[in-house]
Amino acid sequence: MISEKQSSNRLSLFLTFFKIGLFTFGGGYAMIPLIQREIVDKKGWISDEDILDIVAIAETTPGPIAVNSATFVGYKTGGFLGASFATLGVILPSFLIILGISFVLRKFESLTVIQYAFNGIRAGVLALIIRALLSMYKQCPKNLPSYVLMALSFAGVVFFKINILIVILFCAILGLVFSANEVHVQKKNGRTNP
Picture 1 (spheres, helix red, strand yellow):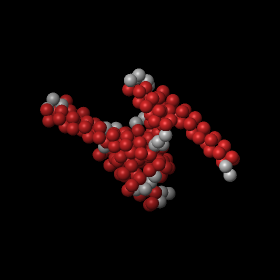
Picture 2 (picture 1 turned 60 degrees about the vertical axis):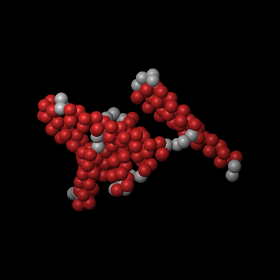
Picture 3 (picture 1 turned 45 degrees about the vertical axis):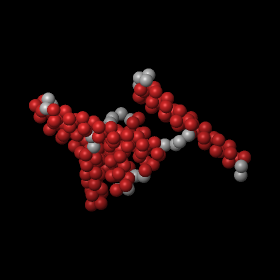
Picture 4 (picture 1 turned 45 degrees about the horizontal axis):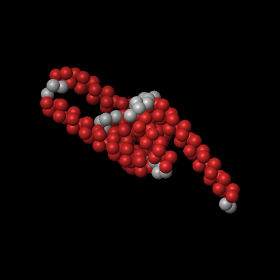
C-alpha cells in the first residue's frame, strides 16, 4: 500500500522534472543550472557536491544527460518508482512540444521571425551552457593534473576530433590513477608524521 507521503514525493518529483524539461532548451548541459536550483537549492534532495557526480554519471552512461540526471535523482529520493516518475516528468514536455511543432513547423519555418526566434534561443542556450561550465569549474579540484587533463581533453575533442567516449574513459582512468596516488601519499605521510 502506497502511503500519502510516498505518493506526494513521487508527484513532486514528476512536477519538478516536468518543469525542468518544459523550461530548459539546449539539452542536458543547459539544464544543469536549473536542476541545481530546483533540486539542490529549493528542494534539498541532493547536495551541491552531488551535482558533479550526477553530471559525471549521466555523461558516462548511455542516453541524454537530462534523462540520466532525472533517473539518478528520482532513484536517490524515491527508489525505482521515484526514478520512473522523474524520468517521465523530464521526457514528457519534450515529447509534447516536438509533437506539436512537427505539425506546424513546415508551414512556418521560412518566416523570418521564426528564424530570428531560433537565433535568440541558440544564444540563450549558449549562455546556459557557459553558466553550467563555470558552476562545474568552481567545484572541480584546482591543481596542475586537473588543468593538464582539462586542456588535453579539450584539444583532443576540438582539434584532433577524438571520440568523446575515449576522452571520458581516458579522463576516468587518469582520475583513478591521480586519486590512488594521492591516497597513497597521504597514507605514507600519515605514517611518517604522527
